Image (tube, rainbow over all chains, first blue to last red):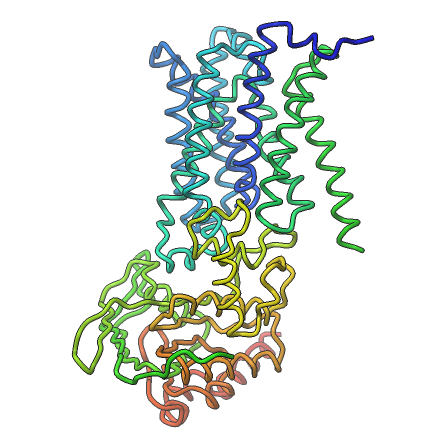
Length: 272
Length: 257
């Protein structure tokens, strides 16, 4: 007989659980807008830019590479936003170019002297190594996000539906778009060490995409996205403990299963 | 439909010397328009003549030169111009979880749309929708509306704050002949029963001839403006829309083959 609470006997598991309880609702919320705005490419590129941010920090001898990572990501996000609004050739191509370029630069610098293994944990993430102080950072960004959501969500949604129409209603389109991009950058950077570059985007997109399969209005969309995100997070952490599999991938696997289930369910409902 | 106020005929909107240059290319220049409340002003012209740019410039969505004045001619006082805008289409894909309530509340309200609906906002939106007989659509998903239904929803939203000027991009997709007829009938009703002026980008010359009070023929600058008769009989109109041109183009295609 397995003891279903034994995983909480360890301090690192309790920290991990708190981290999951902060990160997953954040991702669930942000995802609703990222999916509606079709910014999956954008957040993916941001995730990849973490490597470059760390590399830049290493080159300039910054003590805390977290700092260089966050600064670089914010600049990168604003740059991508600017490109996206320029109406030039297809945005996804340009974002892709910038993203690969920044990953290459990051990899080149970090792998110099054969030291890359030091950073490889960034790729998959390791939520079990999170410390109290780092949970504190997450809590701060959590509060900021909630406030931004309360005061800015309507405007973001209006901009997403029609920019010119939003502007004609007096909404500051550029300000909100940039704030949102910066917020995504901050959240991605502060959680990338625990979730991992390779799968962070899946966690951002999947809960909202699943919710979209079965929701008909904004209230359902948010509720389902939050529930799916938290559920996959907590269950993923538990299962990873008992199966000895990395936590991030486990969470994503559960979130994917939910996506396919809602996809089939939603399709059936619509065909009725 | 419900009446609110009659046009007073004293408000006028003046667009003085408006110009738009984007990336060193002159898209609009020297645009002077004089618009009275209670009038339907149709803007016509070929594709790429700058019609949509003109609307975006009036909305201040793109950098432009020149001024837009809004005056009460009775006492000569300047006022702030309130504009209601109806885009041609919106970015709502299939399966987007946005209801008509969510759509309008996002633009018109501060209370977050992901919280339970507020009675006050719900009532306000329903009232606005009633004007265009669209009140039953309030809880429907926007992506499931027909072209005509969406048009009515967007119109309801545009006149919610009682604008002085209504800017519209004429719907072209998802609306059949009957829908178009209804659309122009609605325009006529609006201008007769509300204190507002309408600027409409139009692609259908037959309807323009039937309903417009003032026609503006645009091609980077204003080629000709005036009553339907004046503009439709002008040589400039012939030049832009003449069937001769079309035939030449078709002949050329054939020759190319």
